[in-house]
Amino acid sequence: MDNKKVLTISIVAVVVLVIAIISTSYATFSAQISGEKENKLTTGYVTLKCDEEVFTLNDTSPMTDEEGIALESNEAVCTLSSEMKGEMTVGYDIALDDVDAETPDDDLTENDVKVQIYKITNEQDPAQTKYLQGTSENTGTYIANLKEKSGTYDTESVENYLIDSDKITGTTQVIYKVKAWVSNNKNGVENIQTNSVTNSDDGVCSNSEYNTQAECESAGEVWGNSQKSTQTGGTFSFKLKIGATQILEDE
Amino acid sequence: MFEEKEKNKNRGLTFTILGIFVLLLTSAGIAIAVYTWNYTSDENRISTGDISMSLLESTDVISIENALPMSDTKGKQLGKNESFDFAVTTYASGKPGDINYSISITEDAVDEGYTKLGSENVKVYLTVLPEKRNDAYQQEIEVVAPTKVSEIIKENNTGNFTFKDEQYSKHSHTSSGSTITTKYRLRMWVDSEVDASDWKKDSDSKYQYKLKIGTAGSIKPIGVVE
Image (cartoon, rainbow over all chains, first blue to last red; front, side, top):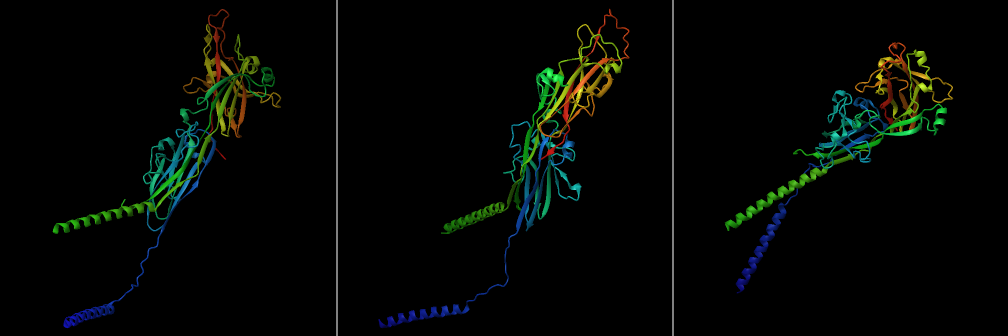
């Protein structure tokens, strides 16, 4: 019985010793090594902006394409510029927005207003000016013709009145210009006599200061019947809108 | 035992594939959201104003009975009862610039029992009346010298004869809400060159010529920027 106790204690002691030796051995061989090469990631940036010029053209009159294009101060401009640190391709859609939103029920609508649209990628080289949406150097198109044209890259916010879709990368600049005028084919007519509501008044003096025939004629004015033709005015407005989104390489 | 191991292996593979797929979708979603840009400009505005044109015709019309050929000198002196006054008035709420207008003559059908006198036999003379009777310059200003109706420019397709004159067919509206009136006087007579020898008292043919005045306007396109 004593011998068994001694044996058991001896075995336990040996096991404890072995474990202690092994632990000591592992402690002896452990090591830590730190590398010297630094790995880092610094973010770049992408900035897009539109320097705009808007116009207000009051009391204008219906005119031909040639006259509208020659007109000054009827041009909306967006100088779209990008600045990128890093590589990215951005697709963008540029369109008219809030078209005739302010006075949709008056006499001036998208069927009366024409635009000439073009973009300039190199101001030093006029040959690189590109006319858009069926317009040319000498002709415009009715804004109504743009209504069904939607965006390519930002289809959610550019659903109609598209001017252009393109990609932009790096640091560059594109100038968009939209000239607008009231077409002389407004309502299919060209002058105020036929494009009008005529009313007639009897007993009128050519000078409204005089109310009787005697007063009128003695003042050297003309007394008689008057036929009047009127062309009522209207207001049309629009904004420029851009929707842009990154294009991934695998797209 | 072997079947259970295989089952666990397949389950692990499925989860791995699903995990990679979800990771790819998440990455793509984040990448699309990384850069978007939207911009809307200020408003561009274009407007037209109200424009009107009136033709005021005098109640006194030309009604010449027993007309015979006369010289231009005498024809130009025909009095108020042998002339026709009318006025063209234009109004613009804004400043559209020049409203150009034309004055035209339309031949009218003669009364029953008459034969129409040819337009080459009738002369017309158009003047502008002074702005006010007490103006220092009281004279009528000649717009169209005595001219045979047939020699006045004929408009395309309308059948009208149209007076065209730069000076008196333009109203310049350079201030907002302006009204401009020009008063005219028209005279007409039988040209002195007409052979009236066949016009007899008992002639079966009685001649007559009737005309009306018309006007049409258009706008010289300019825009006023404010």
